[in-house]
Image (cartoon, rainbow, N blue to C red; front, side, top):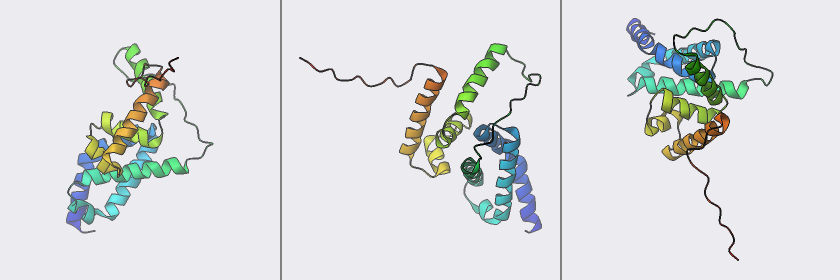
Length: 175
């Protein structure tokens, strides 16, 4: 790679590292896995940098590569792996009740299927529109809506909350 390409790639990494890491963390729920995922993504981008830089939205492409790498990790993940909960001193400055609720919601998000989790993370944590999510994940906007709807129902179920979308009434037989 030419020196000026390397400088532009380095500037891209400095500008977007934190955002891409946050997305990786939200997709995996694990700090070290997120670091590995981001590193793999950046290597892929570096290998194709002149083409990536020429794209209209290189950050969108980077996010797409990251999500693709996360999906590959989910497919390869061994059923013998289990997350470890670290019981260090908490690093928050807010109210304990807020942290408990955050942990409860976050645990539920991590239990969503990969596509539903991806749509949820991109919509509510990355604040992307349905069209941007569809482009990032390579799916139709209707599929994004369907995954979002299914995720909200599943989260309501996992959290023991009333569903935003009540079940349809059943027809009762008339005598």
